[in-house]
Image (cartoon, rainbow, N blue to C red; front, top):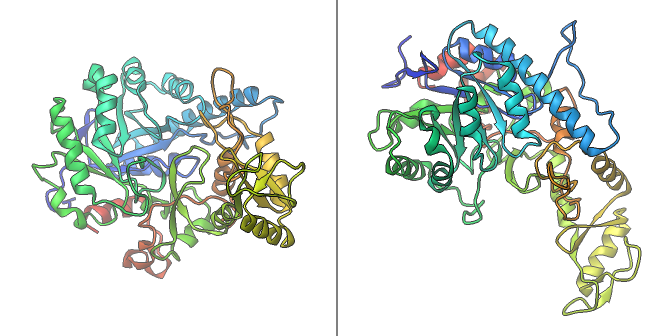
Length: 469
């Protein structure tokens, strides 16, 4: 079919594909059905290799239950689940694609055992995976692993500076396998974002100059203009990116769609989640700092996220001795006398206590937060049940190597990300779980394509995108 102005197929994995990439979307929010269909439509489908689902002999999803007593042993169970699930998803996606498009896998470098999972999956899917996209952290080892299995790699960065660091330290040695560089807009993309400390989370920057700076950095390092930069985050209608296509300043450009493929027939997310996407307004997706990864991330501002906001607002700083403003002893929510706080904070704490928030929990930053007994019990249980899904977890203090602890106090302002993402992906309450989405999700409600409750197939969506809409 004829595509939107100037959009041409690119050569990837030895065949011509549309420069349209399906975003990988973490735990079970993309699977073989959506990514296989995306590839079958001529694009690059992305299987999420983050704790993906496996199936039993009857085709039912195998629940990921952790039986081991120690975190370290549960972490080993998690890695086995992750490898088995991703291998199963890749094989099924490859079958659905039936020789068209390409299948990538997506891993988060910050996930627990990332290297072991990636190697385990690539070992068992030789010839099926075209490339690996990888972000959330600085994945220096990505190029070395790609070289070992002879697959392409596509690092995800949010600045030219991050790319230069990766290139100089590792990627220049495996330049021929770097198939593209994904620029993920840290203000607009769904899920975890690469905002640096120098950037203001409240002030989004125009992606064009940032992507131009990334291309300039790539050119300075000798990377060909034919290596595409994949624009990810905030992409909806290609016609809005008219001046990016065929633009000599930017070199080759491809586009990643993370949010739009959530609302398709093949998308594996539950119907309640799909229905909710149609109701979102501008501003309903929040860029927040509650993730146990320590990264900013973007999700729908539902009651789950609001309760985390409220929890952090019920927070007061303390010191162990009387000092400065801390002249009075906290007498609610804590055991012991060595919590000195400001008089105004004591008054607030007593109010929260009276409202039922009767337990004060310490944070790693010399503050306490006030929670009700149900929240306290859930936090403690989730921390105890930790299965090591991250390389470093702020919520449980788990670390996936050396002595298996971050050495910091577990942070009750955060949450168990594995629990909530598994729950929402498998039909749990959409109000009481984390619901990742990009900041353009409000456009489902505005885009006439979705009117009268229309849900496209992936093929219909790709065809629509190719027209510019």
